[in-house]
Picture 1 (cartoon, one colour):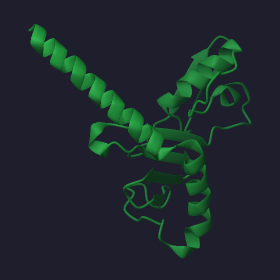
Picture 2 (cartoon, one colour):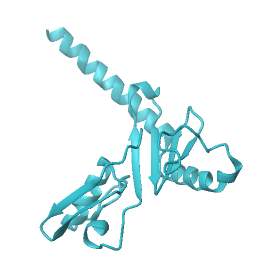
Picture 3 (tube, helix red, strand yellow):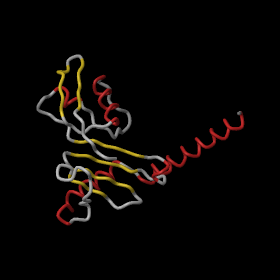
Picture 4 (tube, helix red, strand yellow):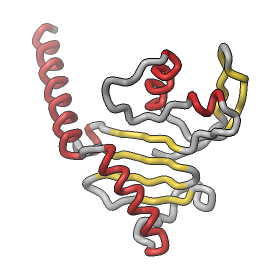
Length: 159
């Protein structure tokens, strides 16, 4: 979950072509497209819509969400909240990680254990707890793994 930033370029009907350095992720596609279409999501979406940033030059996107839920994560999600120049990483099986990207772009100095950053860490930890249910996600990942193994075994038998 390294956070190399590249300029974001957006253009389209009614959108002034613009380039800015803003955190965003693929999770933001669904909320952005739904907002463009004027459709209210029927379920919770983790991504953040870029529509306010696209149409209001004074509003800049400052938050991005990332999730990694693959087998190598031992079934537990590895989740990231990037807000401004702060990056927080949460995983139930690992200690929290907190980085100040403007002074530590290579994420070498984990500030999560630093008392000076306790309030920032607590805010991110609370948001992570509200966004992600580790046990439920783990159950979903394991079920998905089992389903894919079942399909693989069936395909192997047919070969």
